[in-house]
Image 1 (tube, rainbow, N blue to C red):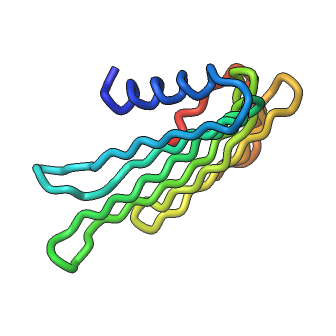
Image 2: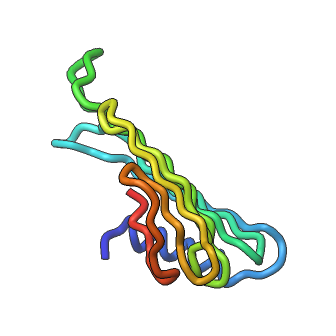
Length: 130
């Protein structure tokens, strides 16, 4: 398990084990390419005792001086309750190519809408969110 996953899971475990008042935590990582910082990856965790939310923001830019050759921006918001994914909304700009997906729990299933249309998946499905 890498450091990012470990820190995220540790923060998540600390939050979801607490009932009552709203709790929050954040983790931010700098992203490097060949010893040069090219972006940031931020995770925000919030729980109110009933539902937990995880927000992900990734921003990358690769270039030379003021000229950018590649840009990546990702936003994802997940909602969890009772250890199950309730839904998410995700959008990504991969060097100008826009991708988006959203999911909502419908009974024991997840209804997912993305670039390829709508599909229904088992409610135990876990998102990669990237």
